[in-house]
Length: 307
Ligand SMILES: O=c1[nH]c(=O)c2[nH]c(=O)[nH]c2[nH]1
Image 1 (cartoon, rainbow, N blue to C red):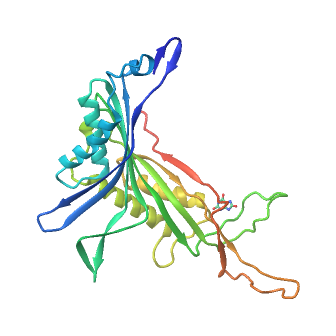
Image 2: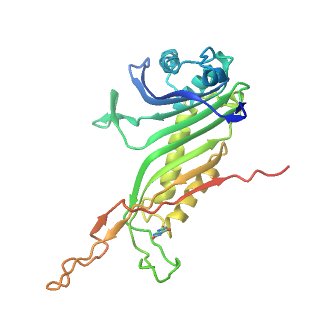
Image 3: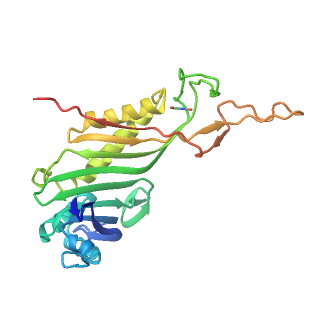
């Protein structure tokens, strides 16, 4: 933030939705592939550009775009979206004297290796559904803030869900139930506790593996065991269990936010004057709807122990 002519100015500039795809061929003839949409935002000392039309301290956003392709070319080994974001952010903060911090976020398209007759294909991929996201912020001193997430993880269970005991008043019509569908589209975002570039794990694809593992913990907790599942008394309670399971399992995650809209499946009952029972609901025929839908979200944070 700067003060100019008695006014406060906060500014940043960057390039959005730079799309890049990278192929790596390994020695065994197998191809690896990633497709990313990259957003870059630079915090830099370039006030004269705003107040005097002087661009001499500006990193052109076109240059930022080109940097994405140049760095993708340089990355000769397959790497996670997180590591690519860090490479870019490190470049901008170390290469340009004017840049004090860089924020890079990436959405990875969910290309999954295809299997043909049970065999992993060498070079064939199909598009999955949920997306891996990440945002890193790096400043000149090497301080790091790093989050990763999942977008669009659609899940549904046909039973083992209920909702009872909520406030009843003159506007309440919803019956209590211990038997309903539960459907949501999970958006998750978690912060890693690595707070400097020098503290990052060195293991290749560490963050890709973490992403897969977090997703698995979220799904296992949502569904419960394949036989019998687990009863959910509310979206709130399930969300909390999912967030708690992630923090319990991964010490390097310091907080997690989950957004879980309650996508309703409404019981269908049809009757008319002539035909009082056309369809009588018996946990079988539903009207799926996502409008309106419930919105349930929460963040679970570790309470730091005071020394
Ligand atoms: O799991 C639920 N949580 C709610 O807060 C809520 N509200 C509602 O109408 N149905 C539900 N279900």
